[in-house]
Image (tube, rainbow, N blue to C red; front, side, top):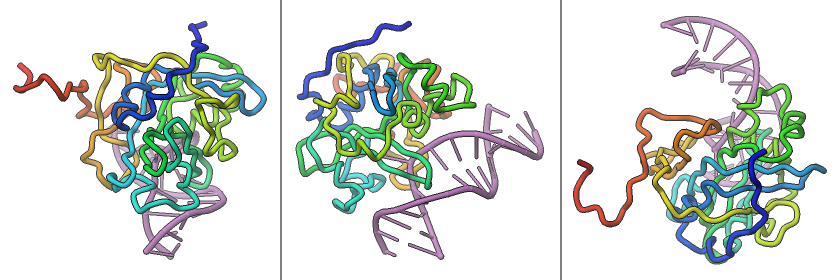
Length: 216
DNA sequence: CTCTCGATGCGCT
DNA sequence: GCGCATCGAGAGA
């Protein structure tokens, strides 16, 4: 069994710029007691959505009943229902009134794998949590916890230390959207088995500072 | 492996 | 009506 963290991250991490929160979440853990069982997974793939500055964001045109949770303070979650059958979960970023969010696209199972198998049957183990809809099913995440404060919740919460090194992070274009596809705001852990998709033009994340010339 | 397509509910134009 | 931050099955390379 892989080690599980019990410590919640500092609440300040959710007030960093959304892209930084997306990076920091990689490697952290998402824990759930929803559906009458304890399940948890390590976050291995995320996408950033920058609210009013991002045509691909559900919040681009401002708040609506559906997207109200995105406008909460950083550290809450935004859960939505899509394609008539799937749920997806986001970590909200920034101060209240703004709508940054980080979609959790894949986790690596850490706890409650047998329960995940029951919930996801007949999927093979590799497909338990390697997609945004799949992981919500495995962790029993649904609209019941839309808007939950993950900083204090006993039903759904984050654990572990925010990531600092970006050396194992791959940058990619976002999956399944039709707008703003040129913005490479999908990030995942290099080599991780549970990443949902590898695209031909994926590249290691480049540092944006201290970099005056192209790579040699 | 890749591509295509149907399922299925709901928010928005 | 249209389209959707998806998934799984099936066909073909």
